[in-house]
Structures are given as structure tokens and as C-alpha cells.
Image 1 (cartoon, one colour):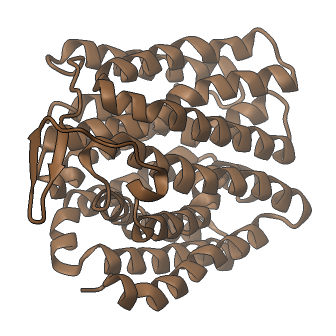
Image 2 (tube, helix red, strand yellow; image 1 turned 30 degrees about the vertical axis):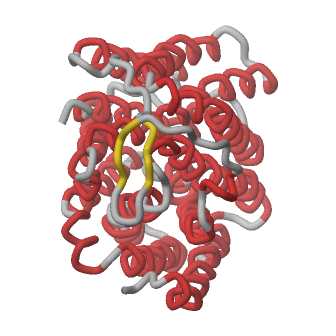
Length: 392
């Protein structure tokens, strides 16, 4: 439970970013096409940098120290947007910010897994603190009206405050800044013995079996389908539905996510990760169709309710599926590939394409088009289930 408070505040930052980053960029005078480019750059920079440092973090075990560095970076960089308002400077600030913002997720997940030891099915019970933080900040900002979406400094203040609280939580909770170098694992047929052994350098293909990469592909297709609801939802509600209730709708999605994420270990034991991923992909398809078929407040509510399974079960099942095929000494690398190659690449492509789809075709075609990737994922999962024993 040590990571409960840091995850609470880390996903409070997510609550502000996911809800208000497109609004912040719009208030700075940028259109949907430019916002799509910014979001694509934001995801790409958060995708690349962690890959280069993850193996070093695993060896040194300095997870908490790196998280603290990311928190300080997030606190310091965003106010620069108020100093200079040009396209390239805004892009640079977002790229630097994304290093801390996107890098913190795989490192925090790796630390959670190190702390859990053999009880990895309890991941959802810890990760749920992040969902609670997300709900609390989005509901608070919706009800209190402390954020003025037309004033950039108002949004940036809350980004800075949540980043500061995240950093302080890492410092104040004993043991989180302690280094945890990865013990060498001597793999036997039935179990692993922690000890000292000579470990040969492995290529990435040797470190991760084909089923791992298949899981990465499924996560990529699922998160590509989530892009409209995760990145353009606030703009959809404000510009297309002409409502100011986007923060409340974001909170609704996270509220219904919480019980499913908390109970994800039970669902995984009952159904297995393969079946849960299949169901989740189907719910992501349904979610996009609801936004498109029912372009109203009621349709938005129905779509947000799908977040319960389409993310609340999908994310922990996908994490456990991927980590099942990763040795402890490659844990941060594996989680970084999950976050960067699967989730990050999906968001990069989705953001770049999504902004231009909105400008050229509108919001409703956006949802229809992004229902296709998870639909493809369903077909691939069903066809490969027997080969990889995914439903057993």
C-alpha cells in the first residue's frame, strides 16, 4: 500500500491533463489540427525517452528516485507556456513535460510489481488509488469551478499543484526512495531462485517471446480505439455538444472504473486475461459507436459508462498478461514497452490522425473510424487463441 498516495497524486495529474490539455491548447489559440499535432508530439516524446532509460532503472533499482525527478520536471516546465506562445516553443515544452508525465507510469508500475512480489494479481487493488485520485480531482474541479478553461494560467496552476503533491508523497513515505537493484534470477524449470549468476546479454527477441509481442499488438489496437474518448472527448463535449460538463463526465468514467479495477484480480482468476481482453475490446467498439450514434449528453454518459470494462478491466488484464511473459530483471523494460510501444504508439498515431479527421470529416466519423482497430483486435485474438492458449 506504500504506493497508494503517489498513485493517487500521479493520476490526479492525469485527471488535469486528460481533461484540460486540449482545452489549454485551444485557449492558447490553436485549432484541432494543431492540437492533434501537439498531442502526437506529446505522446511520441513520452514514448521514446523511457525506452532508453528503463533497462538502466531495472539494474540500479532507483525507481523512487526517478519518479521524484519526473515529478520535479512536471512541476517546473508547464509555466513556461505562459512566457512564450509560439507553435515551436509550445511543442518543445510539451515534449519535455511528456518525458516526466509518460515516463512516470511504467516506472511506478514496475515499482508496484517489485513491492507486490509474488502477489501480482493484487495490482488492481493498488492501481485503484490512481483511479480514485483521477475521480477526486476531476469532480473537485467540475464542482468548484476553480478552473477557468479560457485562462491558461488557471489550468497550469492545477498541473503544478498536483505535480508538487506527487513529489512530496514520494519524499514523505518511508522506503519509496530506497534503491532496489534487481537480483539476478537463476531460472529453473519450476521456480526461480534469487542469487548471483552470470547472465548473458539477451536481444529483445530473446527477452520477450512471441506471445508477449502479440499482447503488445492487442493493447495497441485497444488503445488506438480509446483515443477519441481519451484525447478528444473534452473538445467533443465543448465544441460539438456545446456543454461545459466535460470534467464531470471524465469523473463519471473514472467512478465506474474503480470497482472493476479493484475487483480485477477476481475477474482475472475467474475468466483469465485472454477472455477479459476480448470482452474489453468489444466494449471499446461499443463505446465509440455510442458516441457516434447518440451525439447527445445521454450518449456521452452511456459512452463514459463503458469505461468500467473498456479500461477498468482492460488495463489491469493487459498489464498482467504482458508481465506474465517478462522476467523480473526485465520488468521496467517490459512495462516501458507496454506503455511506450503499445499505449504510446497508439496515442501518437491516434492523436495525429484524429485532429485531421475532426477538421476534415467531423467528430462523428472520428468515432466510427476508431471503432475499427479494436474490432480487428477481436479478430486477431480469436484466431490466435488456440495457438497461445489464451482462453484456457
